[in-house]
Length: 398
Picture 1 (cartoon, rainbow, N blue to C red):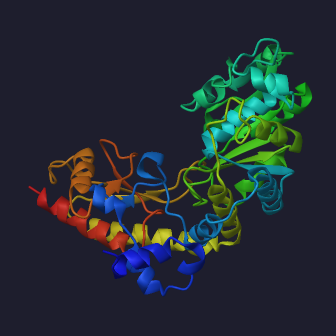
Picture 2: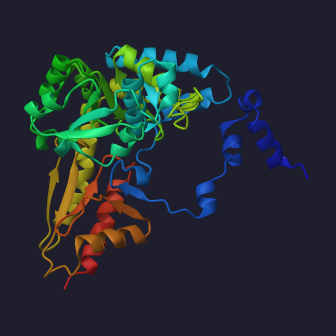
Picture 3: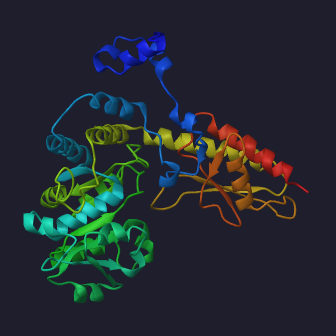
């Protein structure tokens, strides 16, 4: 039977006609598939972790994506136009939207290996006769190495400037720097760029989780890095499947030739469709214009709500820490005397997850501290986390 609901659903699925429907009628046709499937939802007191679906896109981003979905365009033309606008916003020579920061690592590496040579692009991951080595500091090796070595290159580890200069040669495709590891390495950002220029080797910095502060979006290209990778779905709050590759025009052009929509490429499967491209542009446009000071004050307020409630309990202590590089945002830490509260922080984390509403605490939680990341919370979440935490700790008191 073709009733009112099916009629509204049919109209809502037609782009032109859907615009004629009142918002209340459209809302009545929306399905909550997550609820239908019985998938757990939670208050995000963790942070922008991929496994926890990172951030929630703001309305401006969703609106841009919804505007794009019913329109056909040339994907190559759109990537070009979006890249030009991104380059203007981010004060760099060139830019492209990638399939996350890991996708940026892969296509950026491929571009450094092949340049714009069609035969070389077709050949990957076979690097025979091509530049096949990437130099990294040993202390900078990280979990995303596969995004680089997937292109067929091998990573050469060094520790000192002398070792780097000795390792560099005709087979060196690029020098990769992991920004969060700068304090652990013996060569800093400035030194890495300087050596790359001296040796004529492209330098690439992975700054995936390094927004905020917003200035980082142009800091590293301004320092002279040839390529920079950022995650799109973390602090910038774009599509979780998107990222940014910024830098030298010739290398960005080479990276684009190594990925979708080009069919015979190493990164063909790392597709970025029109919705992610315009969504990422809208997210960046919003992010660079955002009142970051006001946002920081709100994060501090959330942390204070939870802290003030928790420290009223016997033996409970709390502080706020801000990681210096990646995830440079307030993290609230809570600890207590285990002789007074018979509960470990890991047990508290588990109980918060299993409660109602479910709360995900930060994976930085350890045997001493229960940690909350406050920056991805939504309105009213801090108050709920405070209440649930106090209840949980009280229930475990001796």
